[in-house]
Image (tube, rainbow, N blue to C red):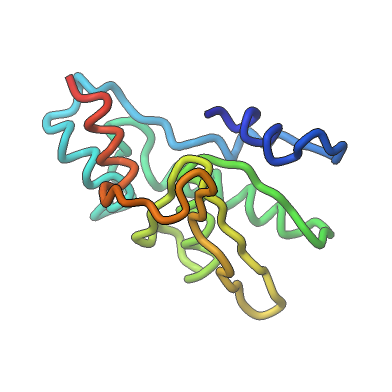
Length: 156
């Protein structure tokens, strides 16, 4: 589901100010045919040994984190009490990792499609109040990660 569709569902017809920030677009993969071991690349996605590596042969993790975290810092400079950010899994992983650790990277977090996370940004530190709640499947029985499921869906 596209971010705009998810946003429309969440807002449920409410009229609130909405902004689109291109810096929060999802990390860009390369071409599956160009990967030497595509299955491994999917299974190890978001667990790079170095941020110089490329996500599925596409965008460098460091470049992705640079743009997402720069936008996050700009967002934090604004005055607001409650904010809804609709984003894809890589962006959510990057933001939560930075908010919780103060460092760029990717904690081992699963992010399901349409999963809801609630992050309370206090004066001193961030508190993750809720992560990855999926109303359509509150207690998933499928133990595969999203990337493993994607690999199985798209493998040649």
